[in-house]
Length: 166
Image (cartoon, rainbow, N blue to C red):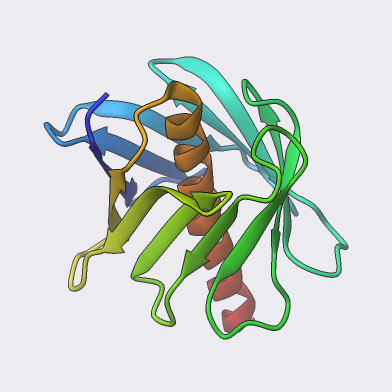
């Protein structure tokens, strides 16, 4: 696996698609959303093989994302009182891992036990959301966890933007 992934939202997609490409612009992972009234299920594929599913928990006090798949079952919860986007993992092999962003949602870091797994930087002035993710760990589980984390960050941002429009 390369050391750099690019995360982009696919334009003009009815159900929603998030593409993760390597530094040569080859598709490495793809997240696809299902049509649903309240909380769609997103499935992450690695070369057409499903590796994880993500669903936003309804009626939770804080934004909570349920994840199932190769890494087991775990939750990603957003901190309530934070100016920036901060999340943490409950359960599974990445219990206690942290996902943090800056105030403009352009930079993110993912760490487990104080060890950085990845850093992401957003692109300004692009037609669609785009983040370049530098993978600091090359282990397959760490890469998959990074992919899941970045998809959740994108979904959380979309959900927050849709709430602001209402």
